[in-house]
Length: 331
Image 1 (cartoon, rainbow, N blue to C red):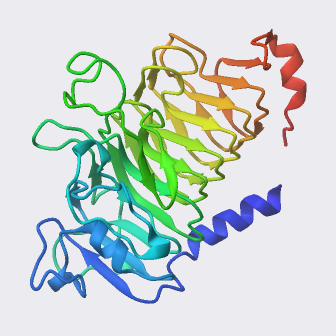
Image 2 (cartoon, rainbow, N blue to C red; image 1 turned 135 degrees about the vertical axis):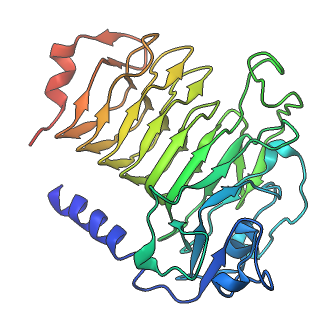
Image 3 (cartoon, helix red, strand yellow; image 1 turned 90 degrees about the horizontal axis):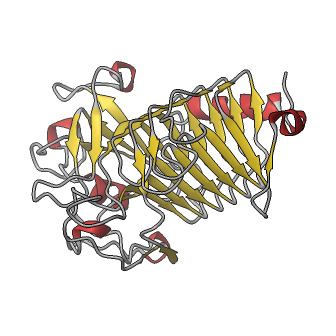
């Protein structure tokens, strides 16, 4: 277990060392807008992701970026990259296999990687459009993505299910039509600031906040989440912070707090999942439910603080703490 965590951290540290082509993005663009340098930076993040090949990286300067094209029909394997706006609900930034995306660069001058500071130079990916329409997902990782990573961003203001204009104020034109990304069908019920399906990206140095539908949703995935704050998100069902279905995420040095869910499990909701949680905090979420609920799921905690946890089996039977604590291995 120690070896697994060490390898994960080392891979995060060395993400940039093998980068091939670098592309540059700045709010509003500059120069020739082709992304070849900071002086010719593109305003279109998704276009730079699409143009990148395995091992390439995309540098993004401080600013606010919104998805401008639909993710429905996106398929990296066939080189199919929709460029039309489509329905506002279906717009999202889609991760591409083995492409690394770094935020946190100053938005002036010619900054190097060593000048990157994601806390000072906030780089925001936002789902709320000026026309008062929200995307179901701000970021989507669908299918195998290899060493793809998203590092140094604020992910906020995705929209979700509910009564248009009441439960779902950001999107009065809500649509329930699923979309297809990299050959996988993404249901609109799988909403969140970041939606992960059949995929295992590295998510590092992120703030995931103010999303309706939850912070992160993952299904059949093994995402690695490092040094990330997930707070102030809301789900109209379960899992205000993270909802993990048939997944095995590795969560390191992260905090899940101040999230809200109308049903249960306001912090983390695990269904048939085996998360590993290291040096992290899951606490201080809404009092309407437990901070963590496990449905036939068995998390492993290492040096972590978790407040309020419930375990249930397939039949909905709830076990007392004295029974399920013995399932956990601690250092």
